[in-house]
Image (cartoon, rainbow over all chains, first blue to last red; front, top):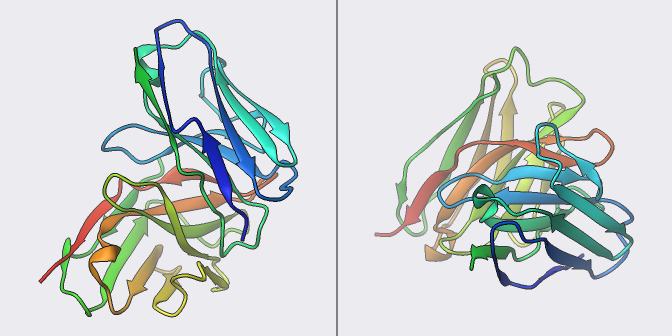
Length: 109
Length: 121
């Protein structure tokens, strides 16, 4: 099984800050990495797919990077709407096991 | 606009079977560009992949749940369903149905709103 580890588990930041969340895979997953945002009481929302591609209608302050085993999600110029939990997901394995990271909760400082 | 309607009981007794259905508001769910998935989220915890199905009825299940899970599809009704047998309190979660887009790499481009299910006597 491919394990996905996010860091940090939680993060405090202020409006206007830049933050970076890291996701590490237990083996190479090439660019088969997605990022999702989840707000309380809502379903997750796709932000980034294929490690670096911005999903339609997602603001350009979100960006993804990395390949192989190490990936990042960066948010520049934090907005109030960005405080949420973020999950990475690998889809490199067979479709029975598209695992998620444990999540990173972004809180307002 | 794409919408998912998740339906099923919100309370299931231990040892019984959890059955959920997701109805999709599309003209068809038979396209080759997508398959259809179930994901769950225990209270206060992260996301767990349950499994998915293609319109050809090919299925993939999380190995940790495989012995208890069945996902089926009815393309004529534009529905796909989840059955989870022999449930315990550990199966208490919000259950999401979702669409997996296979463009470039697989990603979940649309999620249902989620259906809370409690396992309790």
